[in-house]
Image 1 (cartoon, rainbow, N blue to C red):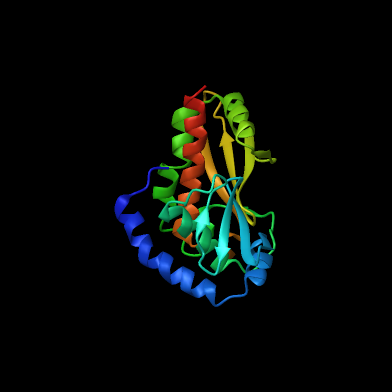
Image 2 (cartoon, helix red, strand yellow; image 1 turned 60 degrees about the horizontal axis):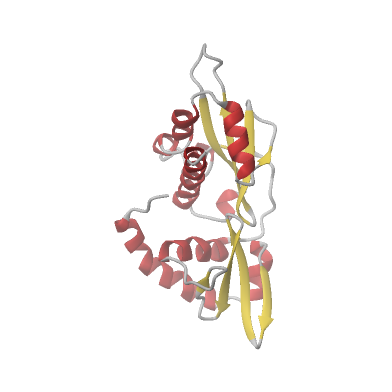
Length: 211
């Protein structure tokens, strides 16, 4: 997903504050609550965190983050991962899917969020439910029983999103929506949850365009 440069720059200060708060925590406890892996390698503590299924390695206590090739992560990716670790409180997955509007303070963001998430999918697939299924499966989506087609994606170990597509059958407009487990606010800020939803829909659309 394209990142607003002003927003990305604002993350610098927030990233430093998040790092400072995490350094005061026990990394083993952080790993337990966030569903991540904590291990000691050559006397150095590492946390391994999958983001969109790709592993990222965090060294403790400097909290530098590198991808599987050993390259440093962009600042906004670091912020997304470290804030997840800081906020995670071990709340269980509820298997209760809700819209952004139903999360705390989510109603204000719902209309804008829908414009760059579900509506983006409808404009891209235009009723091609089978095409949506194929792309979602190819990106690692797990089928769930909602709408005409729906898939669950794990953004982070305890943060799933679901994308649901409804076909109007030519008689009514198609619709699509990103849903969140009711536990989502235990793992990230609302604006970041919306950002993840937009990222997911953009990933699906980009995969369709490459076919």
